Length: 358
Ligand code: AMP
Ligand code: MG
Image (cartoon, rainbow, N blue to C red; front, side):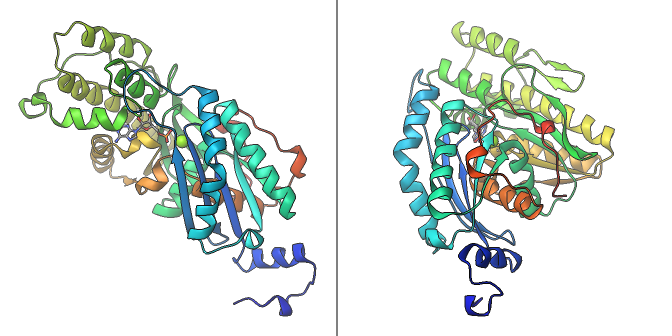
């Protein structure tokens, strides 16, 4: 154990600064961009000591994510989740030397819960605070846990659908959705079909039961790729109309929908890899939990002799470990700001952030 008695300084904050250099620093991460409130403890070397979360859900029917309801949910659960994260890491609040929260992008009411919680903890315990970009956090936790080095990230989540890669000091967006995120598209269709939220996993199960899978058939659906971008709005209307017509089985619609939208995502990812010359594809976001999307990604990578990296589920979905880890990286790179100056930025784009830690 590192003994504070041998530390070059006696002040508590300087002592924590020393811990940081010895990789003993502990960062508490707080995630609250959308449906998930998460808390995690990660050390200065990237060891994930805990990763707890609670997710806003509805069972059946039309209920979706109402921003103020989600924020209320996060407020109710935040203290319990943070306590669980500290307990699981066998840490006390006094052991924490940095607080990192997701400042962007996301639903403003949810982001505010994370900001307020993080500020309270940092002020009360007199520790530095750092606010990080959620999309970039997905990429950095992928690099940490899969050992990818310079990947093209296919980030397929609820609100976000982007193909991101590093170039000239920033994580650039090479392609993205022109309207709704892939996850919201899946959830919206699932809600229309009375399946509840989140809909992606339910549609995946239905797709597996489709007779078309064996027979090799498919229901033709709009395939909308515009250059490097994708669009799901028209496809969603088309699917809802098909569902309402009662001429199709929901299993076959789910199967054909997955084949179509995932092919669109893989096409733009492959084009980004060809354009940048990168030889790694990394998956991120909750929709990347889907086995068919993973299978398509692996096939594409094999065909172009590239590597495909899929983080474990807890790091694909929204999680606070990635927020803590990006906080560590940015803090180590010297990024500092007064606690009271941190704010949320619901519309910040990935390429607004200067990458100082690579
Ligand atoms: P995220 O915002 O990254 O946490 O991802 C949440 C989204 O992932 C929701 O829209 C879910 O419906 C979707 N999702 C989760 N698991 C799956 C799955 N197995 N297949 C498709 N979508 C999924
Ligand atoms: Mg996410």
